[in-house]
Image (tube, rainbow over all chains, first blue to last red; front, top):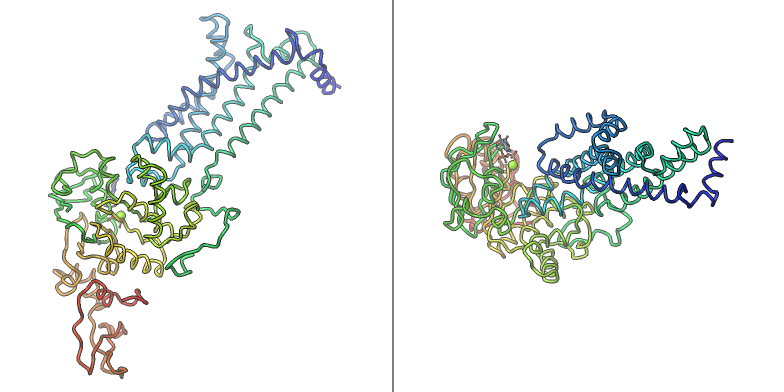
Length: 245
Length: 301
Ligand SMILES: Nc1ncnc2c1ncn2[C@@H]1O[C@H](COP(=O)(O)OP(=O)(O)OP(=O)(O)O)[C@@H](O)[C@H]1O
Ligand SMILES: [Mg+2]
């Protein structure tokens, strides 16, 4: 059976190391992912935060996310390689292009979801714009910002398989070699590895996303929630009738 | 002292929210801006801390034109309390109260110690210090909002319908607390409300506004009650509708020294001291005002 054979390939220690081993290719895959994500974050986060903070350029976000999604990544990569030649640079560039829209969208929608009154009050008590961004908007928007990064990461991991086509390695090599040699076990093993990596990355990011939900704010950013678990004492008041509660 | 000199504000969409407004707000007094929705109260208030800049005219604080002041610096020395507390939801009560002092570089220990004292000042139990705003009732949140407004010990406190969203009993309670606080602190308070009863209760001086922040009348509550300048004011304060025009109800046997008062519709509105059937002269200290305030300050005055 193909699936069993693929698993056998993956767990065969002989396939772990060596030039064409799983581990070095996994490392390369992670390297491409990390580099592309880094570039995408450097570009996407500031743009998303600026648009979210100022509220200007919403249409830009919508147009961008729509049109970038339509770009054929592989085609773009081949096109760029025509000019630059093979290499890590074009790959990272293309993967970053792919990842920027969800990152911008996440950062923008995160900031956009922060209650306007909260921001207004922060300004009215004398916070600077930077302080509003850093101490109010970003902490409150962090779960959604991370949501954008999470989907960007998954897209990069899945799409980084094309590295194998342009002279680089990564987990995509197993797929390409398997298909070229009609070794479907190998190809399937490659597919499983990419999927597994995506699942693990998604799990880790989902966990982080949970952890960054600010205390005092429920998930989904609702404005008023009581975290009953924390209540140690009944609401004690002085000089106030109980009707207040 | 806060002075508005011929101030107008036209918003980008063309709305003339404030049209040539002039007013002097004396120090250490509570001045209440009252008027119906959309008449420009919030806009006036927010021009004092430069959340809104006037289109023309000038605003002076202690004879200094605030147009020349750095908005952030100005805001940090003016307390601001709004309707829905505006607390930072991801920060504990104590951190909310200490926010501005910490921004100003006050050492943490001092800022927190002071914030704790302020919880006492506004009548909140210290055990609430580590709660998040969402774990407080609306009334408690407003108290935290007031504590935050007082944190830098500002001379000026701006309050925009701070008690507008709490239920009437809590509101009455908060109003009394504010009166007590003000007797202790003597801040210059600019208070915005659309509730005339609240205005008369809290204001040393009341400014009744019409659309475009046109002053319909300004004066002490008794001055306004005694002499509404026009029908708009009379209606607004309820004299026109007979709600405040009280007379002694002769049909009721009073128990000794009180006489029952009724409004012009005949509904019982209160009692008046009348030892031996002669109506006594009230002393016009702030508390006596609440007599004119129907019955919602039960338990006080
Ligand atoms: N940012 C703005 N842009 C355009 N118009 C505005 C803006 N802020 C206020 N206005 C308009 O200016 C007028 C005065 O508004 P303001 O908020 O000062 O009224 P208000 O007296 O505080 O009313 P309320 O009692 O409802 O709070 C209204 O017509 C309002 O629609
Ligand atoms: Mg208002």
